[in-house]
Length: 118
Image (tube, rainbow, N blue to C red; front, side, top):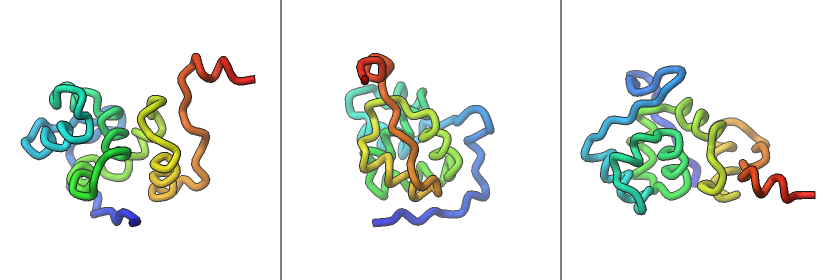
């Protein structure tokens, strides 16, 4: 299912250099679900990593409120700085396609894994 994006007008939680996520009940619920192994406030404290988890594990009811806060640009920023190991190939390619970056660049790799390649 292709994700449709709401208007990006009225967003206040993202500047050009930093994404700030509010610790509302809704955001804490989403954090608890998509970053289940970590305390929700801590997960929201690393917005780019949190957004990658939303893109990987989020259901539409998780993605849409986050998208309304950070817009497509926030998701693009998270993809550009995605740490290795969160997004699988399917999600990596899907989100690049949805956000207008087709074809997707190579997925991020851990430095130790990149050094081991011939």
